[in-house]
Amino acid sequence: MTFAAIEPFYAMEILGRAQALEAEGRDICHLELGEPGGAPAARVLDAVRACLGRPMGYTSAKGNPALRERLARYYEDQHGVAVDPANIVVTMGSSSGFVLTFLSAFAPGARIAVTRPGYPAYLNILAALNMRVTEIPLSAARGWKPAVADIEAAHAQAPFEGLLLASPANPTGAVLNEEELADIVACCDRLGVRFISDEIYHGLNYSGRDVSALETSKNHVVINSFSKYYCMTGWRIGWLVMPDDVIRRAEMMAQSLFISASSVSQTAALAALDERVEYDKRRDDYAASRLLLAEGLKRLGFGAAEPAEGAFYAYVDASAFTNDTMDFCIRLLDDAGVAATPGADFDRVGGGIYVRFSYAGTRRSVEEGLRRMEQYLRAGA
Ligand SMILES: Cc1ncc(COP(=O)(O)O)c(C=O)c1O
Image (cartoon, rainbow, N blue to C red; front, side, top):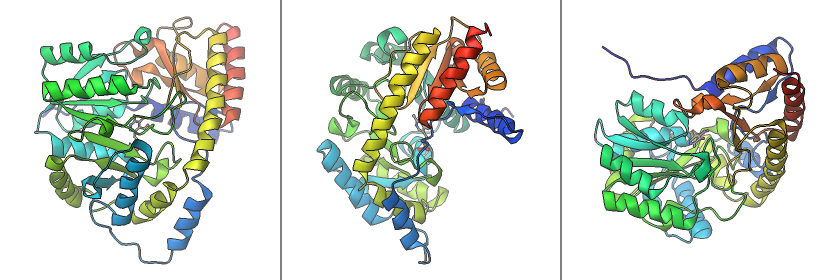
């Protein structure tokens, strides 16, 4: 028997190593994780306090109806599209949303296309489910965005049933504009490919409006989460919007796989959707860290360091220092006390010269991280 080829999630491995150093008394600047440094908005915590002491049993497998109705209103308000709450499934973060999507919208062994670089869990989840993968390579020169011609060429070579993209993207922060997204959705419709739009970084766009795939078509799957914009990573809460031909199967799968998402976290999520004014202020804080980090990295000699349009990452070229960023990141952590994620996490082919720095944490981590890197790199490390 052979097991699926699962790779470690290096950001988590670096975090583990950083925490071990902290346990020895070292001070570490955490630039490795895509995890907001702030707590959820005060009213979210009030809503949770108010529900403690009440019985908090299972909800329906698709989620609390009040939350699904509020999510439908979110699409009306933010994107001007009508979504039927019956097409929404509340999930345990977007991570369980991927599992539910792959199992309910595709036949066993289906092929799904993803980008390289891309979020590493996509490959591992697909491998764990014995599904096949096509990677569509992206380049810094083209702003890390997939072109329709690349998608068509990859499909001609090995036809795939699904295409999974995130915009804003991890690790690059690249954002597809309205026209680019519409072209990709139209390409999927032409090829008979189900589009899976990972919209987890919506709300963290520094250049304009977030565009949802739902604005173009209702045939596809949209995945979102409260982890990033709403600062609720550990609450494990997210949602899916699924087309009519998939939703019932997803519901039945959810009943058996998960029963329901956490009812406490659903209460928090319902409150969070009313706190966008507060969360937009946090986005403005990230915006300042984004510029600080980009300027600092450029000054230190990293390439491709122009600030990205979305998310909270800088995915930069470290070839001035190394062609093995796995080793570089370990030395940077051990010797300089700066935790960053090697590009191999996101690109198993060309990631060796890239490093991802996250500015989701505190401003102090960014400032102090840059200062330490300056000392370390100037010393010729
Ligand atoms: C692109 C992308 N999708 C999904 C996730 C998973 O997030 P969660 O399961 O917390 O919603 C992440 C986490 O970093 C991500 O970067």
